[in-house]
Length: 465
Ligand code: MN
Ligand code: MN
Image (tube, rainbow, N blue to C red):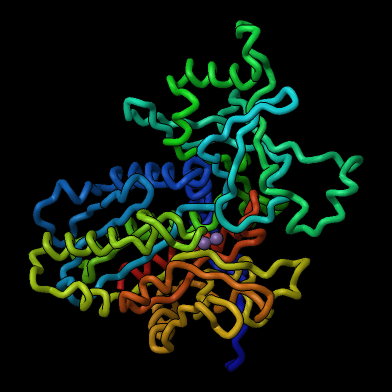
């Protein structure tokens, strides 16, 4: 028997039946990803899946019994989901938490300008991006806008085959001599990341109208949605890459798509809970909570982020409705176990030098457990306790979940964080655990379909504990 630890690749290890299951799961995930293009849409899609599987709104239930399946939508952009267990809630919850916001380009409050015969939307990027990657690619427009009567209008343009798309036209290389001298951080000025939305003048406009292309766009928007320019100030509209999710490679082992950070874990968080509840039936022990939250990419700040005390309110409601009055919420947290379901960096084949290979995550070798995140001297890290690492690893071993242990990258090369520290602050045991990704935060992120499947198996096993 070898004492040495070696990573194993999933494809060489699993039976054909399991490989087929992985392929089927990957396809259902890919169709989710194509629909869940924003946090709003991710919540809508998730609720549709949940309602198909017997979940109802928490508000519809006065009393919660073991086996009950409920969800709570926090302001349209984050979602807490729960299956009630037989044990008292004071024994703690099994929680898996992912995020559903992804890097993108938001419009400014007053976005529409006209320049050189074109109409453009001014944007402000959201999350950490390499700005040049977002130039000269097709973009789709999604969001919500409220008119002056307070009615909510949904916008979704660019995904159907006959929809137009949008783009930011980058400078041609022939005239980019000055641009190319700046370093990669600076050579795209974020104030110039304006999206082309029109080029035709309003032919009927009065002589005195100076910006006829802008005028034409306002007319189109008014005819289609009944909105006026001021209404942009009460909107949340984003541009996201208009690429379809596809298998990558001649052997189809990888998945390429936008927003896999962290919707790959979000989908597994939900599917894992549904299937765990189905498989356990009446024998469910712990109360399980799945959550998909917003605003992780900008530091988990805001009402729909993990930091929001809306989650505490949700747990209060669980205590109340399971007739557990008198139970201290802090004790519930103290006894709870959490998987912080977020992606990590896969070892990048042409940039191996930024990874500590032995402590890195290789695509195709399973879900990655990351004991700590942060940067430098574990600064800002949520560092999981050894005892908890032991519990999670033995759980995965018992359930044939193929996993690897990793760190984001070499010390001093950068760093990152997740929602783990927020749950750690509440007193929960927590560790980061998610799918390795190549080209994270780019418009087209890459995962292994077998890691994607292992992520689902891992969360399902965790809920069943
Ligand atoms: Mn993430
Ligand atoms: Mn991220």
